[in-house]
Length: 226
Length: 226
DNA sequence: TGCATAAGTGTATCCTCTACACTATGTTCT
DNA sequence: AGAACATAGTGTAGAGGATACACTTATGCA
Image (cartoon, rainbow over all chains, first blue to last red):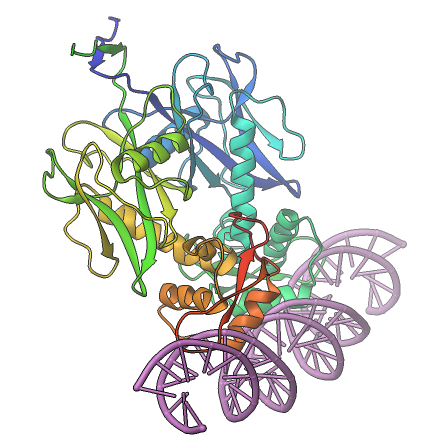
C-alpha cells in the first residue's frame, strides 16, 4: 500500500476530530462506553470513541461513522455537545474535537471492538478509569448536558427500547437523578406530557400483575417541555 | 513581504474558523452586528464577524480576537454556540466553523470597521440583509439559544450597563420576549432572584420620579436559575 | 400650580407540585 | 386450592409559586 500524498496549505490547519460520549443505563446505573487505546499517545489508556473527520464528510456523519467503526453501535440518539480546542490537548498535533453525546437503550448494545480499538467496555460513571487526552472534561460536560436536559425535554426516553412500562421509565429517571420518586406523581407527570401512548399490550415479567406497555407517540423524537 | 511557506499533512485537514453573532438591544429592538465583506466569496454581502483559527490559539481567544479586529468590540459576554461543518458551506475549501454568540450592552459599542471588513453595521433581527455562507442558519441558532436561556439564566442582564434601573431591565425582557410584562410581578421576580442589589443611587431622566439604580451582585457572572 | 410621565408598591386567586396508602392481578409455593 | 409474594395501578387534600390587577409618589416642564 502506498503512502498517502501530502496536502499542503499556505497556513497550518488543525486536525478536526469527533469524540462521542455514549451513555446507557445497565444494572440500575448510568454507564459510559469507552475504548482501550491500542496506539500511542496514551496507549493502553481508555478513551472516548472518535476519530478524524474525512474531508468530504459532515460532522454528524463522522460521529456516527466513528462510533459504528470502533464499537459497532449504530442508530442511536446523537447530539452535538461542544467543541474542545485547547492548544495542548493532543501531544501529536493541533486537534480541534467536536464532541457528541449519545444515548443508547440497554437492549441494542452488541458492542464489539473495531479497527483502532483494542477493546471496548462499559463503565459506571462513578467508577471511570484513567482517561486519555481531555476526555474526562468532555465526559463531565456531556453528563451536565444530560442532567440539564432531563428537566426540559423527553431525552431520557432514549434510554428505553421501543416499548416500555411506566415502571421502567421511572427507574430510568430514578437512576439519572439518583433519587427515589413518588410513583403516583411520576405517572401523572409522564402521562400529562402527552408524549407516550399505551400500546394495548402488557408485559408479564415475574410473579406479579402484568404491566401495560407504552410507546412514544412521535417515535424517537425528543420533545421540548414547557 | 514573502509568501508564507506551505504546511503539509498526510491527510487533508479542514480549515477551522470562528464566527460570532453579537446581539445588542438598541431603539427597543434586538439587533445584530454584521460586517460587509470586502473580498470574494460573497464580496459585498453581509456576514458575521469571524475568521481563521491561529494554530497556537484557543477557540475562545480566536473568537474574541476576530471580533475585536473586525469590529472593535471587546470585553463582552461570549459563549460557544455550536459548530457548523457542512461540506459545501464555504465554496473555497472545507471549513469547519465554531460559532459563538455574544451579548453587548448598548453603551460600550464603539464599532469600527477593521482589517477584513469593508464596513460594520447593526441590523434589527427582523430585518436582516442577505447573508453570506450559512450565516442565516447560525444566527437562527444563536437566537434560539438566547431565547431559551432567558428562561433559566440571568443572561439578559448582559444587555445592560454596570448599573441599571428595574424599568430598563424590564424593557430588555419585553424586547426579547416581544411581550408586555406586568410591572409589579416583574419587579418581585427580579428582586427574588437575589442577583441584583440597589446601589443607593438614583437616576433622574426626564420629568418624572427618579429611578433607583441596581447592579449585579456577582458582577458579569451569568447565574443559572431553578 | 397643575399636567405629564415613569417609579414604586400589596393582595386575592388560580394552578401546579407535593405528600401520602391502599387495592388489583398475576406467579409461585405449599 | 389457597396463601404468600411482588409489582401494577389509582385519587385527594394542602402548600407554594405564578398571575391578575390600580393607585400613590416624585420629578420636570409649561
